[in-house]
Every structure is written in C-alpha cells, then in structure tokens.
Image (cartoon, rainbow, N blue to C red):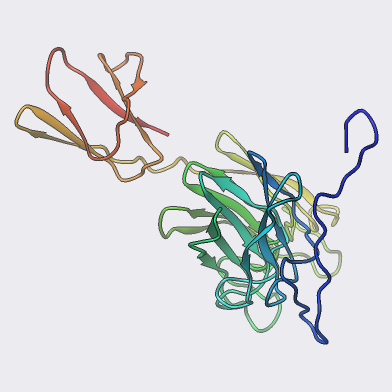
Length: 294
C-alpha cells in the first residue's frame, strides 16, 4: 500500500489446501504468521501450515508476485514442523525456527540456502519431562524469529528449560555449539507470579552485549515482563603466527573475524585487504602488529 494513500495490492495469494484430514496440503503453504525478509526484489518467508506434507514451508517470491518458489516443505520429521516466525538472512543462507517437529517433537533451529538446497537442522530441542513442569535442558517450541550477531544466532523458546517456562538460547552457525543462556524460573501456581517472567514468544534485540526481550506471563504482577540479559564476554579467538623463511603465516579459526594490522601496537588498525586464514605476510620493511576484529 502506498504511503500517500490507497493502492493496496496482494502480490501473492496462497492456494487452497486440500485433503480430508489434518494436516491439509498444498503446493505453496498456508497461514503465514511470520514477517518477511527482503533481498533485492525477492521476499523470503515462512508459512506455518500447508506444503506437500501439511507442516509448513519456506518460500520466496518477487515483490511483483512473480517467481514464487517453495524452498522447503516441512515433514514433521528431523527438519521440524509449523514455522511461525520470520527468517534472518546472511549471505545466501536463511535461518529460522520451527515450533514443532525435530528429533523429539519440540521444534528446531534450521538453515537453508536461498536456492532451497542444503537444508540443515542446526538444533532439535530435546524431550521434556513426562509430568509438570515439563522441563528439559534447552527449551521447547520456539515461536519467535532469530537475530544474528557475527556467527551466533540468538532466540527464545516459549516452553521447556529448567522450570518449563521457556529459555533464551544461542547457537553457532559454523559448527556445533548450542547454549541455554537463561531458563525462566518457576511460577507460583496460586497467583501466577515469579521474579523474571515466563513463556517468551517474541524475538530479541541486541545492543552491545545485552539482549532485550519480552515474556508473555509471570513477573511480579503475573502479566509478563520486559527483560534484559547481559551476555558473558566472548572467548578470545586465538591468532596463530608462525615464521617460515622470510614470511609470517597467520591462521585463525573463525572466518567472521577480520585480520587487521598497524605499525604500532596502539596505532590505527586497518583491515588487511583480502586476508583469509591462512594468510602469508612477507617480512619486509618496518615492523607490523596484527590483531583480529569481528
């Protein structure tokens, strides 16, 4: 819709699902709850239901409504089921959450390329206890989208965790490394209150080393909270330097860090053009100091 008045358009309408039982299926998805992410003239999003198995889809469509493509249809297997949040895009990779499915039925964090290839289950939320408070170690049923900082995704799970009331979590995009950053505490069963909140169902924002978010329930009034979670300082990434003949070979493990150089240890550091690990620097002229920066 134009900002200066009418001209509302619907670039794409999802097709009617079919079948005589749930889940109902179609080719493209149905009931899109999450927002969209835009790259060039292409929109990427999720539909919570529909698709070839009836458990939702990841899709892309041009802003004109042309070129609709179903990138993935969820199966309610290891990939997950019912994605109800939007996606985050980094390079040519989309990251998102599915509220259900996965190895234990409690949802997943996933990655998929913008072409629809290379779908990866980054994490399956683990089984919960069979009786209240239905706890586990990592959380369950993520219904919110993710945010990305460097190589780390941050998100919330609405249930599970140490008291069954949800978690804030982090997961590394370039290798194993799921971390439960915080489990919301138990609620007083009579008055529905606690100190921190319960059941976070929205995404997070990151400022400096602090995450901010909301929890649907709990808190001192039993009506939810706004919370802040300060992150621990990241572990330093080692920079290995070896001398070989008249050259230095520098290596580091995390490609999201850039190699910088300066003529003095307290000087103005600038990125070394084209530097990637391993990087060879021929020894010539005056001394040089190196560091990594994300």
